[in-house]
Amino acid sequence: MTSLRTKVAALVVAVLLVVVVLSGAITFLVLDRGAPPPRPDLASTVTQAAFIAALLEGGNGAERTRATLVADTPPKGTVEGRRTAEVADALARLGRQAEVQVVRLPDPEPGRGDMAGRPPPLPPDGPGPREVVALRLADGRWLNVPMDVSMTLPPPSFPLRLVAWLMLTGIGFTAVILVVVNRLLRPLVLLQKTVDEIGPNGELPVLKEVGSAEVRAAVRTINALGERLRGAMESRMRIVAAAAHDLRTPLTRLRLRAEFLSDEDEREKWFADLEELDRIADSAIRLVREEVSTSELEVLGLDELAGAVCDEARQSGLSADLEEGEPVLVPARPLSLKRAVRNLVVNAATHGRGARLKVWSDGENAHLLVQDEGPGIPEALLDRAFEPFFRIDPARQAAIPGAGLGLAIAHEIITRHGGTLRLTNRAKGGLSQHVTLPLEKPLPTA
Image (cartoon, rainbow, N blue to C red; front, side, top):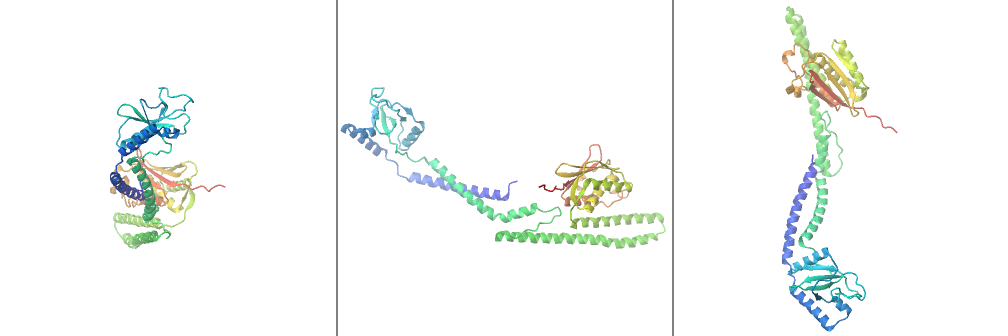
């Protein structure tokens, strides 16, 4: 997932680059069109006059080196492709379209002239340049101009300058924008990290008030929000616990009145209903206690805990067996985790005709699997199985005791331990309750 910082930075960079490209293109076009055109006629006149003067006056060797020679063919040598393209581009900008070559002359042998019988364009012992620009004239002859080593060609064409300028500008803008966006979005990034660090109990972590004024203001707001959420949650839990506790008083009075009923069958129905209400109140109190529990974690053996729960279930007349395996250590609150495992075992034993348990580790997490051979849960209702007071068939409530909070409490406990509880229907029938918990981290060795 792309972060908000990256999205904002990319958007700002894109907008600025578009503005820079458009303004740069317009600027270069205006400057290029507004520049005075070259004067190729004057340059040609001066070049021809210098050449004729050098021939007629019979100048010295250095002057003849710079003279321009007309021949039937270009000089022999190696044609420089890159230099030829540069000269052709320069001539095209001056308005002259002609065949041109840049020839690098070979090292001359002393006392030998040109193979075609004409004098070489450069003296064998001259200090002049070793490159010649050969330009084809209208009459088919070639104009051979020795090129000075210090000679410079016109600057590169407009697109090349524009691209280089845009690249440098874009890099500079991007660096500045990243720094600015990072500072502006720091409070939002802090908020994102805070939301990601919300614990299984739904509480916001307490942050330190450090950084710029904006960041400190955001931290104060987040801490105040977390405090209000904790207060609201604790208040809600206290109300539920108080209501469940206060429910016991009228239940006791109703139980005393039921004792004086003369009809035995009616009295038994009253007692059954009162016991159901008592179980609901007791389950609600336990659920509230789990949500507000702050007891410390201890290292315990998940395999030993599962074995103890199976022993208790068998003593109560339920069928529960644990498959032997390797010891698995997890950090947990012993009473809470035992209550969660007990609820899963009781759920499997009462609804699925027996519970089979297996404990193992994959190196990263601890696993507890509780399977049964019952009817399972319809696929459409699996997502609702962890809701408080959930029952698949309300008509079975009288036949199977319970308040419908067993899975809800187990799910709450396991989630608060940083684990997961997943329900799936087995292919051969029955329900599979798969618990995943973080393993105890081994102590670092020296």
